[in-house]
Image (tube, rainbow, N blue to C red; front, side, top):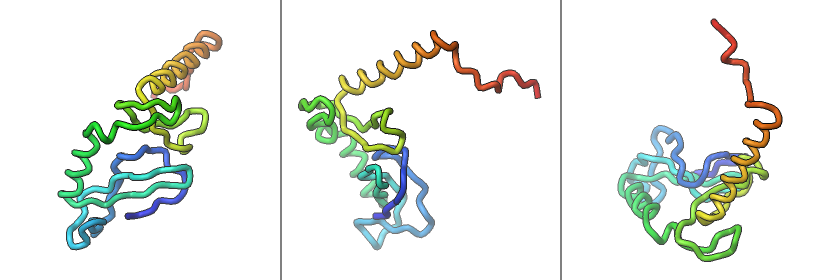
Length: 134
């Protein structure tokens, strides 16, 4: 398992470039076919190097009810629809939270409301790229 130090903005389960010659973490005699981001926090993340068998097992688990069931980090209720997310106010490399669908929707709605309010008060963001004829 490779450690990546420093801020990382992707979430657990994300795929990353696999260096040539990398072997599977669980089966050192097999070549790895994928590097999948594992545990992640504000200090960095673990990268799991997986052979074909391990990659398939990881995919099966990720789709299982067990992988999405537990206690929501934000509302503290038990849920069966947990997913990884970050609090936008903590930055793109802040802590990763496991949150229920209701909390995720509240966050998404609050972000949309803030963007809409900004547009009403200041007009839509204009990056200037549409003004060039080059």
